[in-house]
Amino acid sequence: MSEVIFTASDGQTYEISVDDFGEEIRVVLGGKTVGTISLRYIEGDPPRQPDTYHITHLALEECAHRGIGRRCLELHREVFSSPITAGADNGTTSDDGSHLTGDGPGFIAKMSKAGIVVPITSHDDYYDRYDE
Image 1 (cartoon, rainbow, N blue to C red):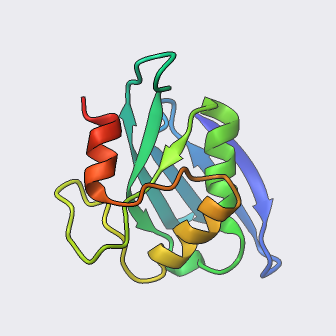
Image 2: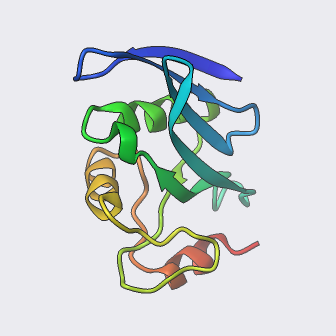
């Protein structure tokens, strides 16, 4: 497990950890989990497609708008050096839970613009590119 201590924009210190498989990121404040991100590992087909991690669940409501989500994804990229993808905001519900709700579309748009998340324009595009 990889872990960092992060001082967020609210001045509080959070522990952010990524499990050894890269499939869960956990945010802890004062011993209590206040956020998680779940990802699905997708084995690539080098050199055409690298190994990738697809976000299937964003649960950062208790710690949103403090720079924590961004730091979570940056830590994941630092540890695994693999692209991160996310679902599309197209109004449909995905079987794998990767559809975006609440603050998710805005967050993913910011992370895509920053180059932290690889944009996928539709759920079909995701499966066309990364279907196992």
